[in-house]
Length: 120
Image (cartoon, rainbow, N blue to C red; front, top):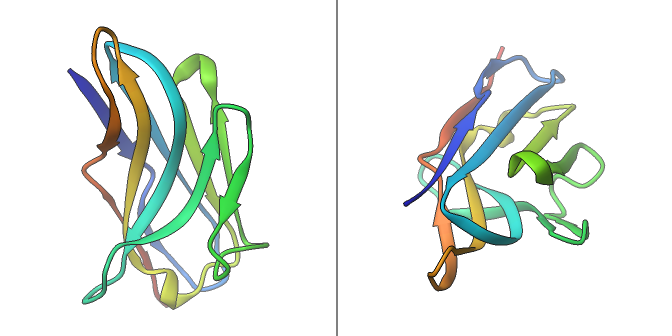
């Protein structure tokens, strides 16, 4: 069994900052990449940022220069530091992990989501 548990969402004013975290736990053999996706109200889920086991990062154009993804490999944890937040960043943020379970196959896993609301 593998679980991804997100934390750190909440309400923040425009221009503010927030950090969300995601910890993977369970019978994990290897984590190839972790990332964050978001689903704004009434819209489809979209990529926010990803980071590979080698440390390579990828960002959506809409968050470049404002968001930073990082990881702690020892803790199987990924972070998303969000600065200069805008109302259009309001969404449910989902953690994703591309990993292989011990004695299992490689596939994607998802967290339950954490709400981020940017509003005055």
